[in-house]
Image (cartoon, rainbow over all chains, first blue to last red):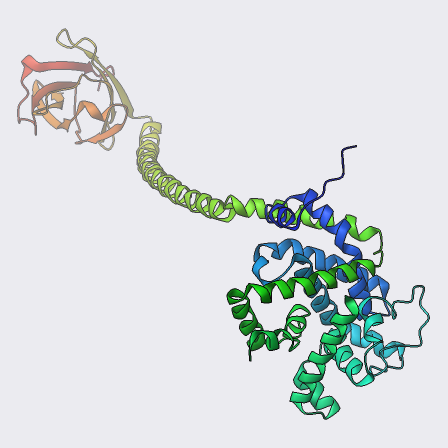
Length: 182
Length: 252
């Protein structure tokens, strides 16, 4: 057995753009857990579906690596956004919505928590755990914008709050979040 | 708004977490290109987000990794094929093949036409010959038909022809079995010898070999002879050029 290979971010990106399978396996081993975590924070009730989304996310990373632009952000940031967008798309898909209806689960987006007791409590992991610390009026907005994927305009309409207020509150909530992450 | 205020506005976090609008994103990217300290602030937030996310990692189902690696290997091989321009190659090959087939089709078609023409010619000839043969058969079957074998004279010892003469209806048929080729201005002429006079029964060519020719009729004849004459024949035979002669065996 050889020494485990480690990459700097620059080396990893170059290797991925050259379609290096070994680099891709490294990428999976190092980031799958973090990306799966964000997927589970969005798709909270179906671990099998979350696994499918993770698969889709990594295949998209492989396919779109050419379009990754390092000047716009770190590789992880890019991947995290792919994972978040894929999860929200799944959440909004017809098949998922229908499955939800059939389960007749009570939905409470304001609280951001369900009364399910799944095998692993995913309601209290990652960023969800951090946003619990936010003021309630901030928490709701982050929940709707970040974990449900609603636009600022949609949220303003849903909660009958002026668009400017939605923007300001979300910005403030994120600044607060940054402090908690430090 | 100065840079400090811009950094403190929450735009960095909004951009990194994917919550900024298109306009905000474009503006932020432009600002980053101009202000390295803004990029440094962005990186700081990205790093803390990544660190936290890694700490909060959830182990994914074990089978997912194998599925992904299998999927990318499949994608990679199809990408490679695209890389060498498989489609272009297939298209070119198809065009060449098509042109080849058109040329081949044309050639085969031409050959077919030629063969069909040759076939028709042969068939026509066979039919014509059959008509004549049937006619001959009818004639020959009549007991009164006399077959006269004509043999070559000293002048043309190889020459041979048969005359079929029906004394009841006077019909005369000639079958050339072997007559030498003549210059194009000459023809063979068949004669009936009647009481020391010669009656012309018509002209023919050496190329009419092995077919049966209907000649002029004659009621009487003691012998038949063939001479070489100028094309079209002559009223009287040139006896110098007598090539073939046959006597009638039967006495009349």
